[in-house]
Image 1 (cartoon, rainbow, N blue to C red):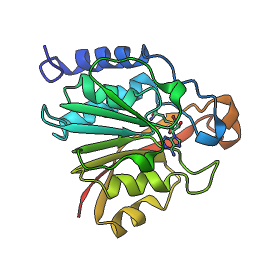
Image 2 (image 1 turned 90 degrees about the vertical axis):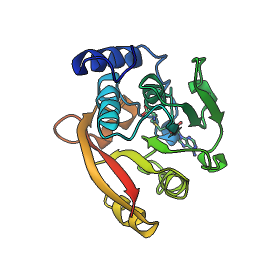
Image 3 (image 1 turned 135 degrees about the horizontal axis):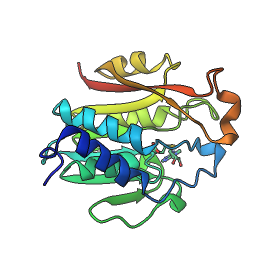
Image 4 (image 1 turned 180 degrees about the vertical axis):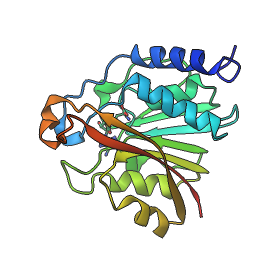
Length: 202
Ligand code: SAH
């Protein structure tokens, strides 16, 4: 049975489990801002995309700054037509049936053959504006919808999206436990607040 056919709780649980069992992101390069999404949160996010009707059998997905591919593979398991994982760090790559990798800088991705972009890219905390090429790649692509996870504190996303012709709304929120290397960015509550944005063309 496909993703959509299963009961809501069942499919969420299955998806969360499958995604939690992927080879973990090595998270070894601080300059690349490697903080991985956890399986439970990724599954909630994918379920939200499906419920909104943004992910169907014909949907071509690109996951930019894919890490171990948790977000893109989630879309693949939810029934996407094709999934491309774009990641600069070759040590993140692993064999997974039904998905393709582009190992290289996000600027090498042409953005032609895509319906949905999903991404938790670098936030530009370690290296200022490191998120910029990701935002530009997504908003200049042929995608119909863009899902983005970013720090809740970020204020530049909405204006940038707007200037490139996109309109955003917040869909999900959560708290990330960042790896120890990023400890100094933690808020007093012991985690970092994140927001998932959904953008469509204005
Ligand atoms: N999307 C994954 C990983 C998030 S961390 C998840 O949610 O778990 C951000 C990822 O972007 C890291 O894996 C990092 O290696 C990758 N990255 C950083 N700069 C990049 C660039 N210029 N081009 C492509 N990938 C990049």
